[in-house]
Image (cartoon, rainbow, N blue to C red; front, side):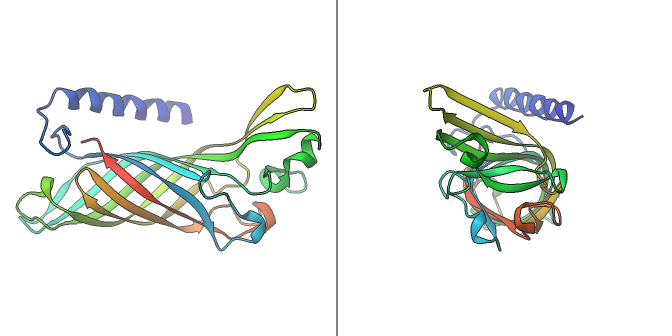
Length: 245
């Protein structure tokens, strides 16, 4: 079911892009002038209210989102719109000190603990890459205020809203070189105790083609007592976004 949903969404985005190419282009960055917005978000991902053991590397813990949102005007020339949408959110966690998530045998396969990779695969290895990835199917809902009430498509705007996401997959990715010089790559798909649903609030501010944004999760990143150290950490994301149309 997860694969079917993802394939459907990818086909939807591809159809929208092909349709956009047939439309007349506007002067704003050459973007196609069609209804709605296709946002691509780039940013950084971290955990709030976490123990020190769950510290992450800033530049390696990244966020990538892609959303399509339509526009519903609220009143005539009020400057307000309601913008529902659908999209996919991907986050990476790169934990410090060459640590990553492993299943906790004392709590079952739906749980995780944070361990040093060398404690699992041996001390005679050189770790090249190490991260944890999560992928969510998401529904963003936001209200926007457009400062240019006469022409929303050329207006600075500010948005507030929320989104809810369903966890499609999670995995760890490790690449290391062993003492014989061979490179090993290990990708392990598990839930690792991540919450199957996430929801939170976000804000977005900028112009039609470029925005800055921030997101704060209202629920815990891991299910209760299923994550490492029984953490109650919340997710915080922020970055920039570009609108393709």
